Length: 153
Image 1 (cartoon, rainbow, N blue to C red):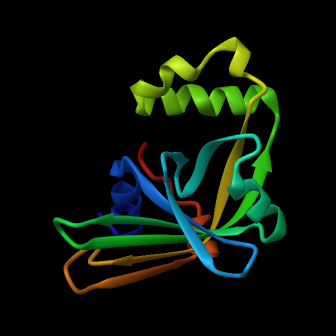
Image 2: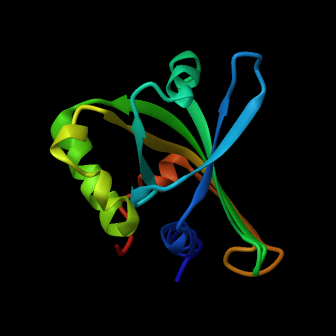
Image 3: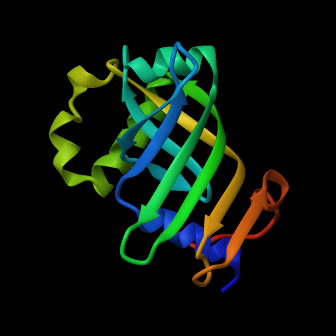
């Protein structure tokens, strides 16, 4: 399996990642988030009114960080962020999210339908350390990430 597939597998296996945005004072700020992904495009359901939405309105870029403390594998995704508020797409992503994180299923109610948006993180660069092997680094550009190479889901 090549580095791209191994990096994708590592990302997909993560339950929680850190999403880093820039605050009003220009400092990076992180929070743990759940996500679902299609290849390296990550989708993060977010309640309307969340602080990260104001931060992303000012600077629509983010860093997604995945880390495994046992193996010291590390992956970061530099991404452009689009806030999606299409109700059907938001609902679809939230359903996938609830499959991955069953404890969130209770919040998936008709009443909550218009209370969420989805962050679409489109990767510009992926950097992986110790993937595929300890001490090795991999950098994948946007072109490499969108190449006609299918990644198993």
